[in-house]
Length: 450
Image (cartoon, rainbow, N blue to C red; front, side, top):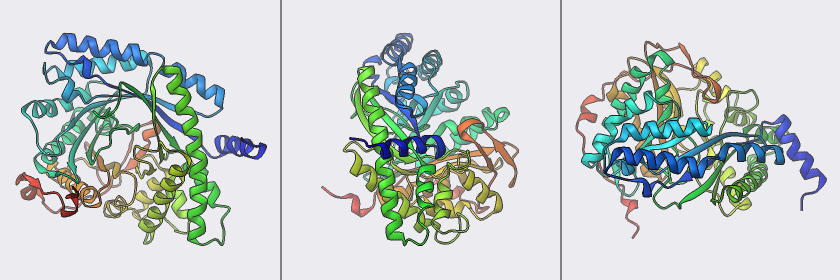
């Protein structure tokens, strides 16, 4: 039973500390929509999304009003289109059907133009990957992801090479929009099936017919709690973060269960990821600086982030038995005011960000790099990040934006929650021969657990 203090504290979190439910994502299985007739597949996909997700936006707005908690985004994720579209090969048509349905329903994004090629690629999957630049650049709401590595299978370097070229093609195709296509494409190692966050959300084959997954965010709430901890040691800091994460997770679970009930769907998970925004006071970087760092990016940043990520997960697990997705702390450069500031000053570098990804929720996220960065260099960055994920048995990802014509120090603005970012330098070492070798980087020894 909530007492008056709990209610007032929640109101303060919403009003003054940017607490929100970042997204309710309806995860839909489209397995029954596959057809060798491409037009029929398009119709089945569109009709099912409209039938099962038609009230998603309305439901989110209703719950936001009833509970007093902002629900920022309403999203849909679907079964990987590489699977649904393979009988007909009509991948582009399915992308258009997804986009049309998303616009008519009014959701912010629809994810699942995806492929799982972490061990090998079929001929159909190769054909699918070749369509990603066209599909993502010519639609507005569709997001794409490719899983190229896993701890159990190793790193598919042939797929890594392909995804580097996809990033470059997306940048070229959307050059007139600041390479926005790259912001809707992410490359994974150890992708999870119940992720509610874009651009990486898709409905895994182990998921049900229709599931509500909730993404909760509250960097400002955590930062506010830590500002009251002057003089406390890091053990006490960890406890404060756990208690705060507990409260945030309970709010997310309440929203998720009610949304699932209203939509006739199963409640899946709460993803407690501290997802920042460009707004002042909603920054993961600020949390790390409140702990005692003069600037994120300095020595000690990785240790502080490890403490934060672990405490968030522990607090969430105490609050709900249905914590999943990615759950932890995101470090997207363009979406975090503190990260942007540190990158502009040169204190936060690509190398330091890579080190931080060993202990954060995901990986190298929303980072702008020079437009002349080669596809091979992008693939090498992806390979490095996959290696961190595979060896550490965690999810890692890369979402890079090679800004056409962009030079180091330039700024690119994506608008909204995607924010803006300075163009950061990359190494000028040539990695092309390494990437062109292809093949598989074998799974680590500790993957043999059977």
